[in-house]
Length: 477
Image (cartoon, rainbow, N blue to C red):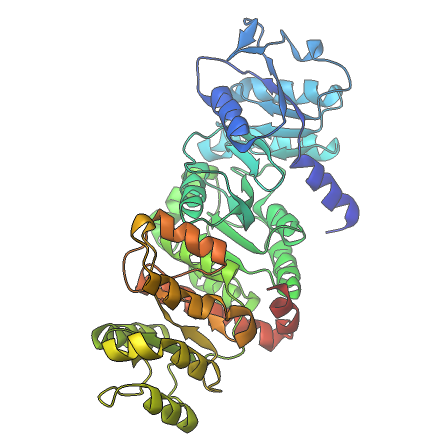
């Protein structure tokens, strides 16, 4: 992305004075937009346009686009029906307002007539240097910089700025993704819904996020890529900068492909070919929202491992066996400890404990030797990732033991030279999530999802080493 295009997109996602054509109290769009802006602490000013209203939701309204103040508006939102939208776009462009968001549906997702309408809109925008997001989408939230023109009403939780970008061709589904990220204390940089992509595409948004100074991980819900050539280019840029792309791509089944076509008018391709493309270009494909969230959490908090050896220690032989089976299913290597490590472990553990990987500390070893055991595993050349036991604090019931056990790995994360992914021994709650978030670590709450995320981390690290980009990525963390 050249400097001009990046700056134009940066301005697009930082609107200050926004005209809302078709704003009304009869639907929730404008009210949601105001509410989201207020929740985010945005300083945006809104100028609703409605010929039949003096004010809407307490905001002064204007009778027409021509009545809007001169040289003030830098963004236009169109929420009239599709048959009236093109005229509104033209009127805004004549006023010099060329950053636009079209909420309206009734375009390519509806069939041949809607496709022709969308093509006309696309042609006009391209010929007149208009940047337009939509139609048929919910807008965006620039959480990092606190700008919002988002008309959805289902994103829950505190808007926490962070390093994860979201690109969603489905507005409602991506609202679930944004909510789950916020619930897990995973901050968002920029959240974009793209809908039918008449002008701005998912590929354009991914490219922008790759070069955004705040974003370090990009997630997405994709129904169909519209520009595979550009996708190849942006994935190469992502690899060079060490920015992982973690995507749900629907359409594995015939029903999934049909759903994509009816939703945004997307065309689905051969899924097996797409899987091969993803592997070749280092795109991380996940199957569920839960897997996406866990993988984004791991990538946001963990350094890339120098190798693929995982070492686990826990407080239960049964859990160790469960973890070993999960790792085997996912292709995660649990190497044997080195002879030196085994010797050192035997000196610390009780006589009845076996120095295997996964390692069962036993009750006696847990209370007396956890700090030493962490240091021993940290010096084992066969181990690149350590999954230590952690104890989630429980608010008023925090114990000195829990704090001491967690502090063992929290205080040594930066100096040990290994990737650290703690495994909670008891249930997590919001207090524990906030505690670990402030400590800069990300415990895996559900072992199956957590180990899937670790497997993605290992494979992505291998991909970057193979392509010669690993050094730059490791420096990012």
